[in-house]
Length: 515
Image (cartoon, rainbow, N blue to C red):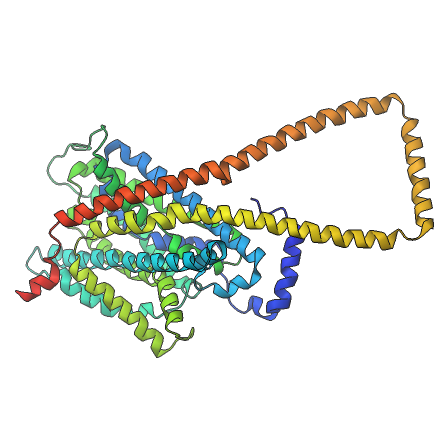
């Protein structure tokens, strides 16, 4: 990493922080460890990759696997470089820690100015707010499914009414603070996700229905391009943690470990999702539903799974919407402490999400719109763009530090060597050193050859490292990710516009209540 080699600058940064902020406040709040940061990442992914992702992958056939791996790999890369941006920004300007309630926008302003910060802020708010709507829809539809399965269809409350009940349940949970105040919620959420996966596998194994054909109707050919775009949008939505990533990082005890937290969280979630997808594809094939639970037979494991999924969606909403709530509270001048004003603001946003969910009943379409149109810039375009700018600023910063250190050292050396006796002693030492070398004869020539060969090896290794660094962090990789992000965002947005136009959405709950 480009910023790890400047130990002197890190010491200077530490002294500057002590002067600016003092030492008393550094340990005043509990920070997130790597373990709890990983739990927060898994909590942000939630149960969607387990119950709502398999259908999208199965619809793409054999090409669904490389599509998921490709998108997730790019997301890991951009998440890591985004975390590095904050680490570099803290070194270049320690006062940026005062903006830790909206770190993504702070990085945008630090690199490209106020207008970019406003753009990122609006995009973040829309993404985070829209991301909570599928949570509400899936939770409400699961409760409707639970009532229908238990009563064999005789007792079924529409998800439109369950949305209102869930809104009432969510409000007190949303009044909590930032992720460092939610260790218990994150821990419970991860246990719930693991339990959901295991219970789903059991339910699939208990399906003793009519005979089936393994991997029914799943083709090995290339699926339609539109299907790939739709799957891309859903994958991007379900694995997007960028709006919340920096909020977790600024609460971490060791901020440079954010990359490990992201990697461990993704590996955990992808393992659970991959097993569920394989079992679903083997048992149901193309007959799988957008929500895997809807095709499972009646069983106590299914009932428990539905309840746990609903619980996890509610808990993950508390963590996932934290960044949006904090920003709106700052804009409206609300206190950072627990107040009535905070409760009113957060409850209003919750009920606004409920209203939109009543209007848009298809959670898969909402995922596609948010994942394909809104998260593309946040995931694939802005992080590499910010990182390149941060590297330039860091390079300027290190050059200025070296210049200032060289100036100081030259002043010290002038004062130190004013005494002529020191020069005499140094001259005698140098002469004796040269005399000792001259007496070594042939051993010097052998040593010179060894030093020359060693120098060539070091130069070659340095060139290889420079080439690898160029390939990894600079123009080629970052530029490729940005180009992919732009192309995928435009194509997915174009598809979503026609998909919304062709889908009969507006009957929903509100139109049904008018009848």
